[in-house]
Image 1 (cartoon, helix red, strand yellow):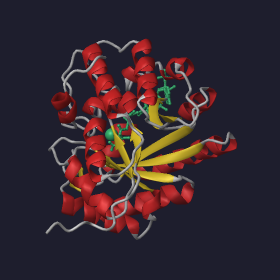
Image 2 (image 1 turned 90 degrees about the horizontal axis):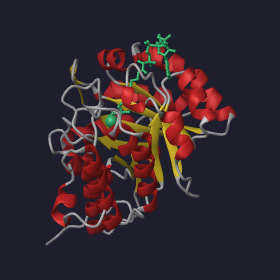
Image 3 (image 1 turned 180 degrees about the horizontal axis):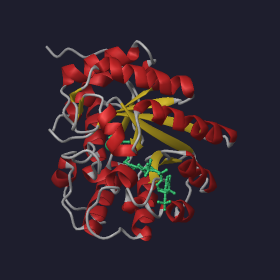
Length: 307
Ligand code: HMG
Ligand code: MG
């Protein structure tokens, strides 16, 4: 007899991070601004209501995100869609505010070594830097999301103690982040481990303020998402065609593919508001533009629809 888990959510909000997490690490020439803009517009048309569109970081550190202001200026703003951008410091936040983003995201990590490689400071310093970021965003009526990276494992420090994740998540919420996205940056998690991590974080932060940001490096992301949904988590970060990785996390492959997440949610009867056919077409289109393979199994199975 099939036992139905009773705690799966009825609806999941997908945060599409492909235009940012997906493209930031793309090797080769700088992706044209028009391509980024078309990707974001297509994703909104496919029903994604929360899109991380750009990153106001140093172009020396992440050259692919160097045209964040141009991208934000050129996209078609669909009512009801939130367009977000990363900002690691006040300079980044000033750019994001000027670009009229709907949401700013600050990012730290549970690992000191990762934080140093990623944003060139300690975890404590990163939180201090975020204070004026959060203040400026709030003054401008912009909400702030917080990321905690390396919630399971770190490419430099190895296994991460869930208590460290919980402490950074708690601090970010106290500072004013409305939501904390828990990043399995190098995709090493397995279902029991992510549940244990979540259990520790939940002691400090309510599940309604948590999101799962799982990279699929070891092919575990869908299983891990199912595991955290069983605990009541209902916000999932994903990337069309499984684009992406992190320049400071060696071996990090793309985020879990949005197409694969939507297919799983559809099968579970969980609403996401996303049109899978349009999304699959978008994934094929962008991978064609980039000249790379499609990282979504669902997209490969459904074939190359008109794109
Ligand atoms: P730094 O070198 O220590 O900073 O970098 P600095 O303040 O000394 O500035 C150095 C130069 O950068 C200066 O320019 C600044 O003006 C400029 P120069 O005088 O040399 O010409 N600069 C900036 N330019 C544009 N926008 C800015 C900005 N800030 C300074 N905002 C810094 C510190 C944080 C800036 C740098 O380390 C950085 O930009 N890091 C970004 C790293 C990044 O984007 N990583 C990927 C995103 S995180 C991720 O992918 C994980 C996630 O997906 C979750 C998960 O998977 O776990 C979110
Ligand atoms: Mg990521």
